[in-house]
Length: 218
Image 1 (cartoon, rainbow, N blue to C red):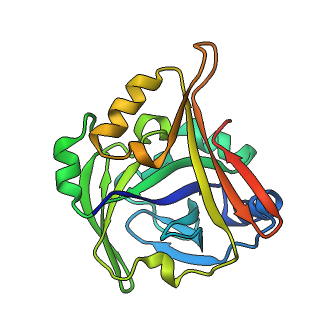
Image 2: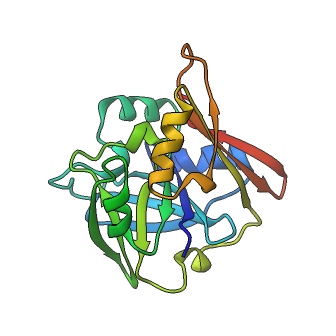
């Protein structure tokens, strides 16, 4: 089975702030998702077609802080400061049928495959000990779902479709080699940036009100 783009992640200081941001950017009221007790986070979710989805995530103020760092760099000071200003696209996640084989072949440390569960969903996701984003969010987290069908099938379909994911990087060949090592190069387009510019990625989403672009630029 070929690796697939599983979901894109938008982080916010609070879910209310994130819902407002997505309403403004996409013209969509993204529905509630659930809670991640292990991570002290909660989310909103919606389909993006082709078994992909959009996750809006934030620290859950009503949950006990975990003894370990939260995922997606949410505990980092610069991330917290950035999200207080506004929500933003922070990373993406690749779906694989064999997370251990991906880890073994990867040309970078994808983290440790970790078993998680929520209600009737179960999965493994590779997590770093310090909770950091991989490649500042430009390299994907890797997930393997144990539940069938893909969980996006149970999410609300608001007529949105993920059209493209583009990474802008100062060392395009380096990035392509890392993506190739986890068989993810077909999932994105890589464009080379001048050294004076900061790397970022963007996604194009077809919405009922037209084609919209979201960016990880701070």
